[in-house]
Figure 1 (cartoon, one colour):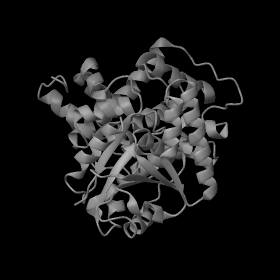
Figure 2 (cartoon, helix red, strand yellow; figure 1 turned 60 degrees about the horizontal axis):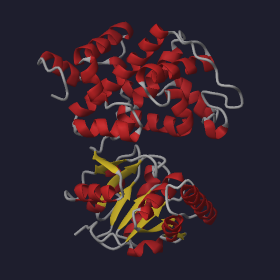
Figure 3 (cartoon, one colour; figure 1 turned 90 degrees about the vertical axis):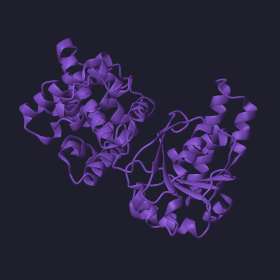
Figure 4 (spheres, one colour; figure 1 turned 135 degrees about the vertical axis):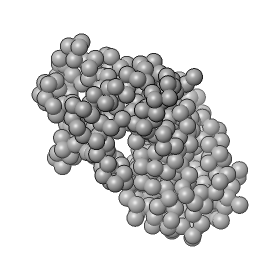
Length: 396
């Protein structure tokens, strides 16, 4: 019987930002953790980084110094997979490469006990495909944290086609014990957040490419200003892509597009591809959509333009959220919770649709489709069905 009742020790594979963050979260919840990396240098860097982070939390009064020391003492750093032999749960947080993940999971099975749960932190690869490499695929589940894991509360729980039926609920309970906000999602490309959020980036880039918001930095700044000023978003799409890293964002975009059999809705942009090819990844390289060696450009603060930009992007997001609901990716409450807790949206998109009006959203999508004649602007069946049936709200 696969169990999460006696987790004993939590294993984390990969000591990068995500793996270290997950280790910190688990240790802060009182778990003993084994943090593994094949690179001793990476482990040393992770240990120094965690030590500095925990000391900073103590200095700011967010954690007693004794507790900060205790959290670090609960993390054991290992460069031998054999250290996972006593774990009740192992979470993989390595490169987004299916073959690499399958190899690691296959190797793990020869080390861990029969009731150890194997979880992947993948953000865009099919959990089912990862589980297929295992002799016991019923023990495999997606537990997807958001970066930085200690700060962002959302965790997506993704059962595969093989996952033991009782495991998602038990994984959810464990994440709640770790003071996280878990939602359960179907094993479809991008799960909830990385599927629903795609228009925030792709439609913003499309608007920029149309050329009426100014060129280069001013165009990016205008769209970012519009989304913050009229949508209440904490960051605009270009600021956020530069923070996430254009290497990461472009890879997720391309992966989701390919997994949806090249559906035009998810088609990547040449603008972003060129940045990716030039290795202009954003803040971490000093340049992306913005050049961080120079003052930030001033936006065109035109109210009508700003409102039009905001509502075009927002309706595209609402349309994607409605589609996710229609295809059973998650419950409506979980879709809205995922977007507010995972990427800090000011409101749940389906609740936002209720405020603006379902009919308005459908009319906007139909207008965009009529204007561009592109399948990327096809309206969700969910919106069309609701209008046809006279349903005015998702929440009634």
